[in-house]
Image (cartoon, rainbow over all chains, first blue to last red; front, top):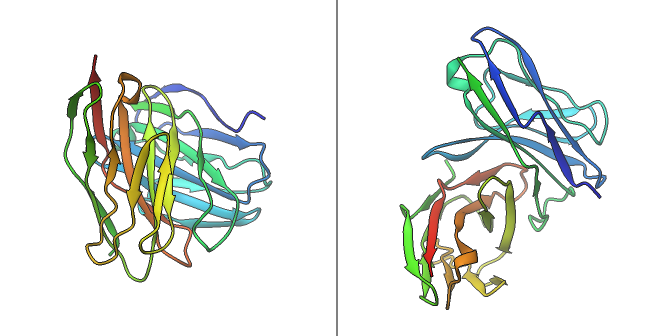
Length: 115
Length: 112
């Protein structure tokens, strides 16, 4: 199993450009999520999904769009990149359950620089 | 709202020293609590977890006890190794939701 994979590993954008960060998992997990990691801020939840066709906002959703057409994939779209979106982005997945015991598995991250 | 507060880093210790990284939380109800570890250049990995009061999570010599009365989940290890050098994140998940809240992380550096 590859686990959670993310592409690209590193990307440089100019302000106003658009791009999609890819995330895929091969563990048949229903729950997937996107975080951004900034110095001194920890990880902050951007969007999450509890299954194909179902997405919801996290703590910092503005400027980002998501969709979930398959169980395996959960892309994150930046429609018009801004310097404030310079960050490291992590995708994570887990089995679905409300008990809180499920382990989240994280991808290796995508480092994004917006000039 | 819900939040997690971790002690500021970095924490620098000599090999075989005792480690404590403090974590306190604010949440409604009884959240699940987690410690994640991030090694350089990698994503986060679950280190341990506890889902109810007085539960003790443990893994790889690390331990943390869910203390409802003090709203704390401090991470401890009796004897750290150089290989434990990493960033440690405390996190919570509110019951009945799928939203995780992370602390700011504490960097640990262990010297040989």
